[in-house]
Amino acid sequence: MKLTKKKLLLVLVGVCSTILSIWLTTILAEKFFFDKFFYYKSIKHGYWVPDKKISFADFGKRAKDLLQLEQDYGSLDTKEDILGVQDDTETYTIAIIGDSFVWGQGVRFEDTISQQLEKKMNQYRKTTVLSLGYSGDSVLDYIIRFNKIKQTYPVDLYIFVLVDNDLMLADYNKKKYEQTTIYRDCQKRFPEQKPVYSLLVKEGDAQKNINGAAASDSYIKRYVERREQSWQSELNLCILDQSLQALPTDNAIFFISQIFDNYYKEHLKMNDKKVLSSTDGRTLNEYERYWEDPYKYLEVSQNDSHPSKIAHRMFADILSKEILTNPKWGW
Image 1: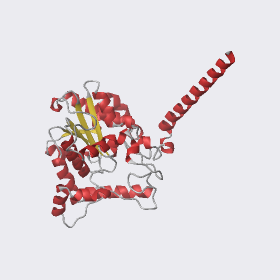
Image 2: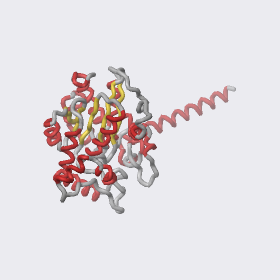
Image 3: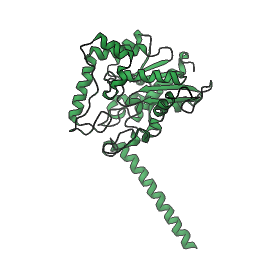
């Protein structure tokens, strides 16, 4: 009997030691060797893993709100509620709309801006934050998504996350764009121009499109050139400006990245929009030391310049401070 207990204890210790070793190895690998073990290898970090059949639903909670919105928008006549949350006065609902910054490329979903903000706000009041961002989206995609949301669910506050590549349109959404008034109006103003689309990767590169896999150096160079072209395109700028004007004012915050933030700030403030910037994080004592080396702390890794876990937390702190202190948002 004693021998059996000793064997069971030994097995239990061995199993616990193995689990602990795996956990510690994963933590260390993610912290110090992200590019080797996780960059475009981990669906849990929001990557479409190359050479692996993945559906949108495979991303689980990360894609849940986007999928649910499409489902409920398609059945407006029969819906009673959306995303499992009924319209009530107790729950404060925030919709965050954006691209890969909101999708959270490079970080676990629980560490994204939407989840960090929801966690912070629930300390004060019951809050639901809808994560409605997808890699590669443009500002025109934000308009399309906003129009679906406002017809489907009563949102208290919209947060639009703007970054420097939002002028480039997604090649795979051409037909959707052509159905919008903004696209058609701008095309009439500049009939000789074609919009600048995000770069599709050729067979020689590692990925098929911007969301597919780790990009080669040549792809990155071409992508940067295409991004610069979008900021010089009268047609793309027209689409941007009209989209920003069409987005809401009374119940919306526009959160922008550092690059090109002066352009965004100028045009948004001309239309009485509320603007916050990632650089506002410099004023928060907790993040002061991270700004001494932002490339090290505020980006995912050397290969992936998307916001890190620390940056997402900082974004959520900037936003929560604004929402809690500004009576405009009806908190």
